[in-house]
Length: 472
Ligand SMILES: Cc1cc2nc3c(=O)[nH]c(=O)nc-3n(C[C@H](O)[C@H](O)[C@H](O)COP(=O)(O)OP(=O)(O)OC[C@H]3O[C@@H](n4cnc5c(N)ncnc54)[C@H](O)[C@@H]3O)c2cc1C
Image (cartoon, rainbow, N blue to C red; front, side, top):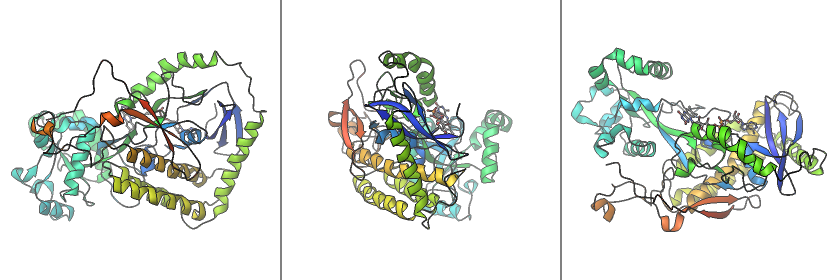
């Protein structure tokens, strides 16, 4: 076991992943480790958006370093946005809190029908209780009568965004909708609701300082899970022989449904059931212990890691690591978040290289690299988030369709579509273009600063044919 140790690079020997270079986070010591095969289980990249429900330490570094050593990054544009999070409260918040999905079983989601009422609530002149029943828009129940408040996460998230974009958002920032238990409490009694959700109500009250038994909760969508990741085959091996990738770090079979179904289930299946059998397929063809850290490639990669850390420490600029992370995250959220379009993505792809340049010339990392230095740790992660954000936006730009966790506003059903007129689906639903985009997009790293190279893995459906969703 190597606790408090961070992988900073992958060692590839004759085209095979044969080890890692790590940094001891307490002492700053850099060491190399050789193996017959490498397994990455380093989680998702949700924090590229700066604010997300993920733990602060979640990052893309291990996966991205492997990507730069040749592993393909697949479908990064598919991101799950969870509708039930506590809204952003200010400019200097570092994390978002997820409220359990289960709340949508009993809570009713609404915003005022009029933008004037919403504004009065935002300004503290009215509360939700002041809005009469017939002035409330229970928009999910209205739009999706058979699923109502329990419609899928992407639909519920986008519907909340639409209301807020119309000026009907209710939190102080205008980015919030009500999740109201008034009817459930009247129907089942406060004790029953407390028994079901007491811990969540308590958590909400501690964070927001409002009693959700008396006033409706406020929620807003937030980044929660990332379906893209390193490309793997059915043996969970990447295109780099010997490099296996598990859980949220890979682009995953569960992610292949592009909405992010049970993430934990995938993690457990990968770790308990798949890899113990499949890694043997690779190991059976390797001579055990054939590569050791005495191979010159280990020293080479170790030196590259040390040079990179030195370059970061030597910048001695004026801006904090967090300020770069925040700027990047807000840009990616704005241009490549819940809804994307060509113009916004192109804008992001122009701005990200500027952020990268500014980072590498003006970031300030106090302290030294030879001991505990959380700013240095963060700097390495943010440097990778900046480069990764470009791959993410390239993927979203190239995919000229809407599909699951990737919604391009140019590609949605409208009144003019036959499928809406004949009741197959409804306006605003994602419009796929299977004839052109029924593939996994696997991106290969090229030269620094150059766009990644796209490889397509066709998706072939033999038994179950993809169809158009309808939650009417
Ligand atoms: C608030 C919340 C609630 C959720 N609820 C559900 C749910 O109800 N159902 C469900 O199915 N899923 C849920 N998920 C998603 C699910 O928890 C994750 O998808 C899952 O935990 C991912 O597991 P993992 O092992 O792949 O990665 P992680 O659990 O993220 O673990 C990755 C580990 O790798 C470490 N690491 C990262 N980079 C490096 C590096 N360079 N060197 C060394 N170590 C590194 C990290 O510190 C971390 O310990 C939830 C997620 C969140 C954030």
